[in-house]
Image (cartoon, rainbow, N blue to C red; front, side, top):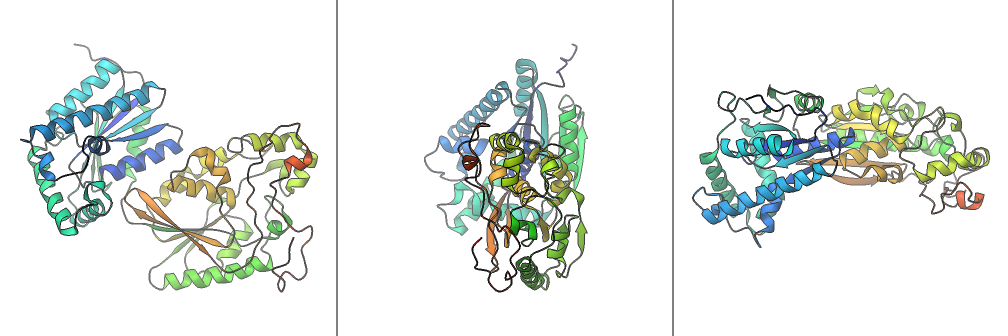
Length: 457
């Protein structure tokens, strides 16, 4: 029979395959974050979460035994519910659903493949996660023991024993994907979280992009540091954009930042990424580490409004100022950029940064909002209003597919440049309403900025 041809524009279901502790959930969430950033509305449906809804409290590994009929029934029902919700997500007009389950038998995969293609008309891609690297496997196991809801009520010894027996149950049932026996499946096999990636019958634009992402993925523990440049002369004056140099207090922050980072570099080497603008290079100058100036890290281009204060923008371009407040994420300055434009040019930078460790990014407010929003999986409309203060180091530390955030404020005074969205965004609003949330700033550079850092704007 002629195989049904599925449209390139059909929604895509991604089904994870593999034993526990092989990195499936980490891969699922990292891939979802990547796809969402690239405009593909994506959601992860975790089979374990559905299973927990049917259990008041996780009892033991027994639920995963092949001969445990009650446990098998719960797991089948949980998988069915996860797939049903994934289908509803795709039917609702979204692009990609990721089914994070084990799917360890050929029968499970055959049924899922047939259901998606024949019944729903969706595209489906299986991603099998294999891990033979003992160090990586042990790290995955430790993360499961620390962060899985199943083991919160157990002692460490009980949890280790339970997880070991759970893995044994799964290994007895596991049937790896075999291209000879499952030739009709489109699948990717990922070994050791990206060390080796092989593909079988992968076609389609989305699938090809996913294959490229998986091929460059690594799963190493990360610590990343982000900081805005030190206070610049334009910050002091309330001006946006430009290529201003640091204020005296900004220079003090550069000294303090170097002292802090150089202390860390004694224990483990650092790499520093800056933009091409003077204020980031000045801020990073004294850090003893290899430095790279990256054009994609340059601040948002304000076009005809470069170098203006918000007061001047309101006076000269009140309609543009109101439009920006109405939709700051998508608003593009005339002859300039929008936040969406920044997100687009940051894509290769973020892909590279996902697999780096001990990198210090010295950047700008709008750019760092986007970068932090990516790693913290923030909603896109929240990005333009994230508070990224001056003279503060933002430390991200990975655990699984998530990141812990730590704000390290260095004791150097500076102006506050964070502007909240005003409630009145009408193009007919008064000047007072337009400027109500504009941060205070100096009209001229004060000569005593060195000594009197407590002076009020």
